[in-house]
Amino acid sequence: MIISVSRRTDVPAYFSKWFFEQLLKGSCTVANPFNPNQIYNVDLTPSNVTAFVFWTRNPAPMLRKLHLLDNYKYYFLITINNYPKIYERKVLKVERAVKHFQELSNTIGSNKVIWRYDPVFFTNDCDEDFHLRNFKEICSQ
Image 1 (tube, rainbow, N blue to C red):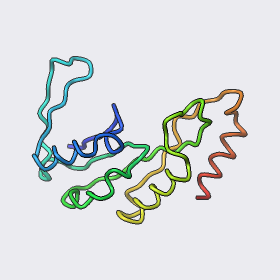
Image 2 (spheres, rainbow, N blue to C red; image 1 turned 60 degrees about the vertical axis):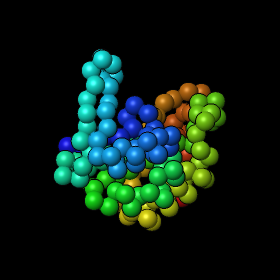
Image 3 (cartoon, rainbow, N blue to C red; image 1 turned 135 degrees about the vertical axis):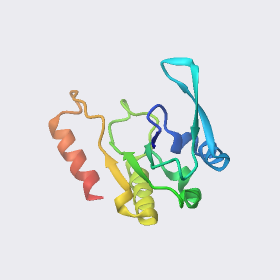
């Protein structure tokens, strides 16, 4: 079973303590987002998990406990956009986000860390030229 961690919320950034507690426990319960009365028990033992896919904007809270994932396959999808603050008020500054990306990549290997420039949207201040310059600037780092 491939477990997509964080599609609903940024677990690595905000709930990494909870995640590692569940991992050590060997399971967790998850409510169906379309039917909250439907609760699933998810087996998190290495023999049951094919891989974890972590979606995040900030992997830093997980960095010190990555050794707990030694018996698992996993990778990180990290969103770094550097949009104007009017669109992303509470995300890390691009320099810090890139630093965390690089640290994670150096720790677990570049084959397990994927950068996401997503979502892409167009406004007067985020036009095609902005995205081309912004993307190129982030790539250079």
